[in-house]
Length: 343
Ligand SMILES: NC(=O)c1ccc[n+]([C@@H]2O[C@H](COP(=O)([O-])OP(=O)(O)OC[C@H]3O[C@@H](n4cnc5c(N)ncnc54)[C@H](O)[C@@H]3O)[C@@H](O)[C@H]2O)c1
Image (cartoon, rainbow, N blue to C red; front, side):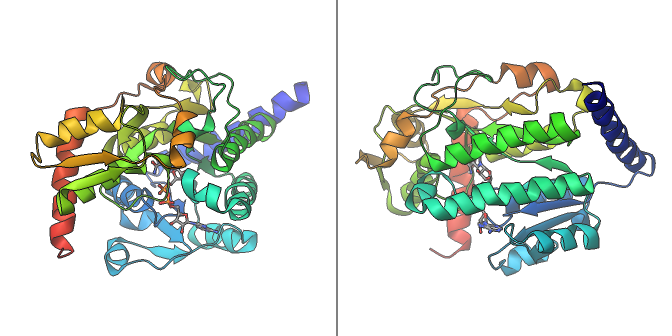
């Protein structure tokens, strides 16, 4: 026990010394984002580049970047299943912080379980070892989908029974537990936030909350939307602006302030019907119909309301974009995107 405590203390002192050295020399952290060309990565890079400088945030993925993404800043190939390749990137670019976004999301994961196991679980093994080897601060997003039908659903506390029923949820619980274990065993600076559905104008990656993005695209383009969830399916949600601010504030929070390595964060909860009602104020002719599919069963096992009081208490988390503002921002951003793409 004493040896364990001494080890944790010495790793912490080492990491803390590294970080304070960064602060003393005013060198911003060098950040690598894996799976960075999905819904969250590109916006996250923009946000963090605004804070730490264009060249200090390195986007990576296994898919090809658009010209627009390349013009924004550095973007390289990185397969999270290739450990040596990841080592080379960390060394060559002197990476300090790792934001691990690569994943197959809930609905897509159910369609290809073996691939979800490889990307979400084996990939996690690689990045956590990498972070340990090079003393990186590592952020791995978790999700409301890390809870299951046995969890209290309204509200869902930070610590409660989890037992999810999707491979995505199972892989995220695995990531949470592995990260906490590496923290206690090796002093690894592991941090994780359980995000609700994140709403942005970018193409979503195949999660169960995607309807809340697709509904804006179809409403603006076609004036109607067929929803794959029942009208009264309540799920927790957050605008991307708040999600990225939460990530950034949490990454910067001093270790002494954190009582946990994994926190629930949320902003609001709504149903498809409530969302459509708000949208009609901006798009009066908009019509929505409902045809639930297999995603309904997944949604029925998710929390309806996440309790994020521990994040609010420990590192002062507070959402800023409310329901009305979210709808206003989405109508504006999706309209601009559709106009820019010429259809
Ligand atoms: N978007 C949300 O609403 C939401 C909510 C909660 C948590 N999260 C989490 O945030 C993270 C990012 O979510 P997102 O919506 O941007 O996901 P996304 O599906 O849009 O993007 C994931 C990216 O991972 C990449 N990827 C797949 N296999 C890879 C491999 N072998 N090596 C490297 N990259 C690989 C994909 O090419 C893709 O660009 C995920 O971990 C997700 O679980 C997202």
